Image 1 (tube, rainbow, N blue to C red):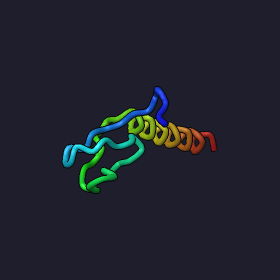
Image 2 (tube, rainbow, N blue to C red):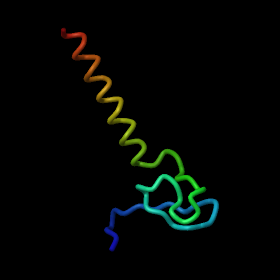
Image 3 (cartoon, helix red, strand yellow):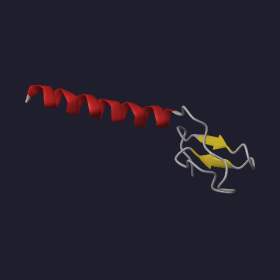
Length: 61
């Protein structure tokens, strides 16, 4: 079911193992995924890159 690159995190509240894509624990809905995961870094970098491209576009006009 899972690939070699699948990532998981363990809920601090109930100990349930969650998929990285889940931000809140699927079991208790109270635990939160640890910060600074690779996905968070990727999303943050994507947002920064888009902001930079938009700023550069404004400077050209």
